[in-house]
Image (cartoon, rainbow, N blue to C red; front, side):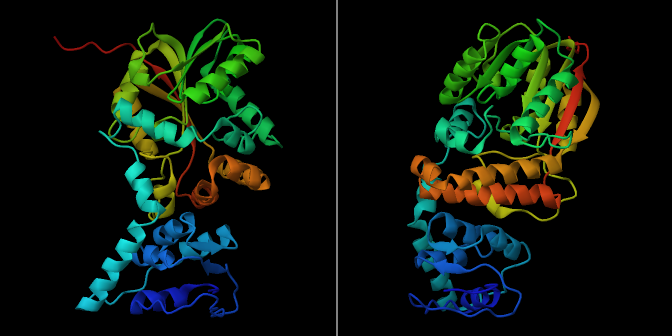
Length: 403
């Protein structure tokens, strides 16, 4: 079935519950504006759409391979301005159709993913470890197809004049070091160190002694290799550990780059307090995170469904409140939303340019997840739904506990 822009045909199906389209049937464009072309590859497509009309149902159908589209960006454009039509909710016929749609959708890959999703107490150490490994352990080789040579999986900084992704990521690492005021020999904690790009940069360019922590063993293994190749293995210590498991002398500085999104609202206060305990009085924290904007009124159900399990962006005001309650004093805040939009566009371009290799590593379904995720995330930064802020804060004197 083809349709552009797909609005009335889908509305008709949702209102009537009819699924009489046969294989090879085409629906002509309903106006002259053009739009994406959709092809139903399985009856499960309508089941997903009936169960969750709009972005979420169509996104699930696409990820499951039940529906195909020739232009993902155009489809997201269409869905941003589309809302589900009022259905006929009364009557036993409508009720039976909705129940049948749920049963068909629950037989598909989406149901299997829900069963395989992280279990246990939300944001417990064990569950956070499983969530992170689900996302990152697809393979180092897969991420290498998308990222720059430093394997940096966070917003690059283009707005200082960088022309390539490699330059933009170096600019970001240099900017973090500058904001932290790193000096040779200082002990630095890199929370959520990934493949070690910042740790290597801080050790090589500033002579810092860096401890990096990640929950992914494949990440840690490659980070150690990269530190050795850069000649800084003696100054970079990569550990597989949760921030709650660290038991060490306080650090001179802490970099938290793309980590707060994994913490969630339930743990943000405990996270800030733990970082304060791990930092010397007068030491600096650089928190680099992509919070939801307080002014954003429209959700992104596809983005919520496809992002890393249990990840939840917080408002900047909530992050600042947690830091200040933990004893930090905020010194500087800078936004980089446009930089992240450009970074996501470049990641999507790189991944698509090596689609066959990526699909061989990750599988067709996960590639469809990434196709939607990278584009939906980019659109969030372009529209103001999400942003990216670097917050520099200094830790004040340790609070005295009441006796």
